[in-house]
Image (cartoon, rainbow over all chains, first blue to last red; front, side):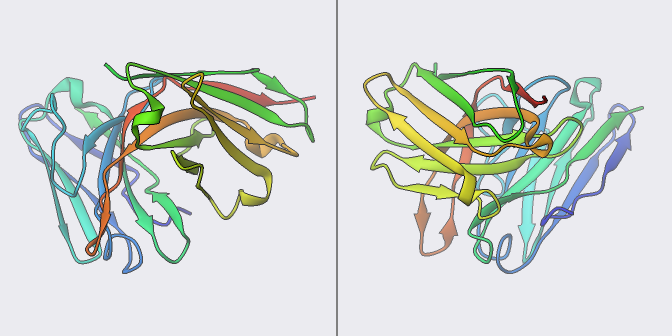
Length: 110
Length: 125
């Protein structure tokens, strides 16, 4: 059971807009910024979004992040086949004194 | 370009100590940042193990704290992980990563910006 809650799966067709949610509590998302990572099978996670909505250099602006209270979401617009991957949210947790991750969402492009 | 590379035995016997090293290139550990270990059991999600600061200060996942030691060797530009008394539950891909960001009055703004490729460690007799 992960501290941050994500839907196990999400899907969309090419060109569509998809959102992935991440729900937490006041001790993590409610108090600290959220980070998103993208992971393709057999590879290391890659930083996708930091400080809730900041994209590292090289990440397309099709990806956007938002946070409100103890929840956050990652939106992917103009969905492409190469976006098919696992997505993880993460934040620091004061109560656990620990980085916590969501369980991951497997995105399928139909 | 910052690169991280994990190395160490791929097989460890139960009750023994798992030891991994992360070599950093393209950036001097002496220059700052924090350095972290994360693991991922096969088919499962990510779990933070701990981080070390340049000062030598360490932060560990409370669930692993009694068995984990993270250290840094600035002369070799690398940092290391030791997990003692391993069991099958410690079987995972182990990643090292650089922790970027800062902490201010609004909270943590930290994130893991560079990752190693990961190394699979299997605990088996």
